[in-house]
Amino acid sequence: MRRLEELEIQLVADGPAVKVYARGQCIAAVGGTQGGTGLTTDRGLAYLVWRGGRAFLSAKGCDTPATAEEVETIRRFSEDLKTALGT
Image 1 (cartoon, helix red, strand yellow):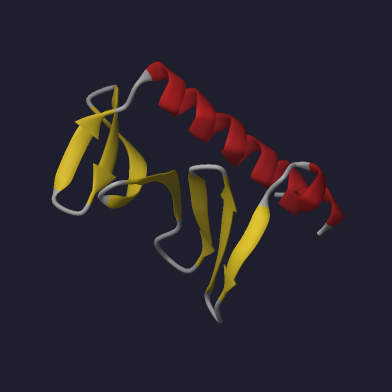
Image 2 (image 1 turned 60 degrees about the vertical axis):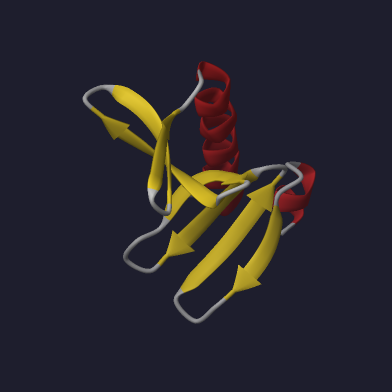
């Protein structure tokens, strides 16, 4: 938990199968069968997905191209979370 705090990552939900972590607009579901990392948007959670070598933010009923900045923000969050969790 100390490492999470140092990286400004919060545990926001701790369910029986999935834990949800957040920092800024980034959010990650860890555990279960369908975890993922993405951003909170005005349409809700948008997961980062790759199609044909291009990055998209996929929210319920809507895919939008992800900017290089969004991809980098999610990448940094994901790497920090892996480091903090020791995975």
